[in-house]
Length: 379
Image 1 (cartoon, one colour):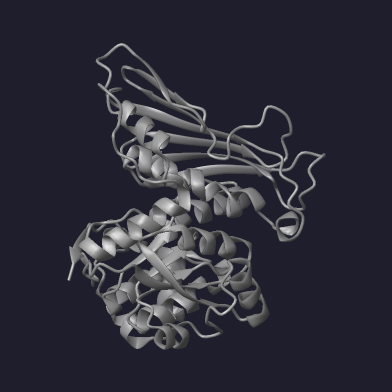
Image 2 (cartoon, rainbow, N blue to C red):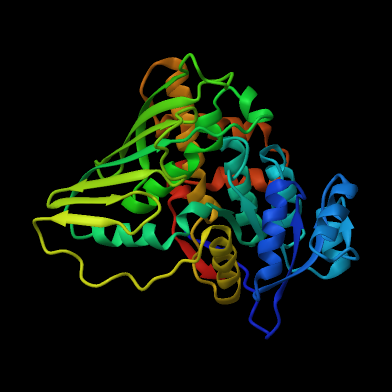
């Protein structure tokens, strides 16, 4: 099974886009869009028009068009693509609206609130023939690419570990979440592990816990052990209430293989110690930095038909890792990814309201098969 998407050939002008969502992350995206020569900001969508106008003013563009409807504002201003920076609960409806209007979408992580909704969006992207890409921004890091390149000289990799220890006092909704670390942060490291290993999860066993000094209502600490499709183990240990000697937001990584190990502290150049022949030179590949890298990858895909990281079908599996880890922690048992995917697929079939999307879903030979299909490029 192959996935195709429509391209927008290069015409010498920046790609006109609208940004949906004028909150804190929305403003970060608005600043990145304004600074990029690849795109032109044509408008801002938010249910709170006051917030949209304030964001436009903060950019120094008080006359920038704003609206509450994604498809309508895009049509009014001649936008060719949508950047969806809404809260997770709005990812599904906003993306569905944009895709149905023939607009490609670059969305903030996670792909949707649930894996079931993520499957619906993957099918909606197939139906529309438009690109739907999820911005897993921490993949866009030159040092991570270098760590992966160095790891290629280790022979068979047996274990990858990521240690994440921070003590942020956010206040607000995160302090009241049921699974603050797993839901709001761990998806970054889970997705990075998929990238490093070029592998997907098979199963997970996870424990969550909360030390007595934690200022979070929900469990702010977790350890998860994933079996991956190549037989490797990925071990994540993290805490959001561990002050002192804090790690990078990217985590501290060890990649251990047959001939040695690669270490990366998440901030500086990775190092390798190996008994084999180390990879020569240094990676010349520069993926860009975080959301600016995501934006560049998105525009390049639309202009050339190249396959971007984070295309929706592949990205659903990163959210599935989060859901499976939470289910394991809640149930005290090992959770298989195929079981979770099949349960999510059945839920998706039951609640899908678009009959055409439903037909696409029913055409999939298997859930994992549909999600692992390689993009076929431009239409």
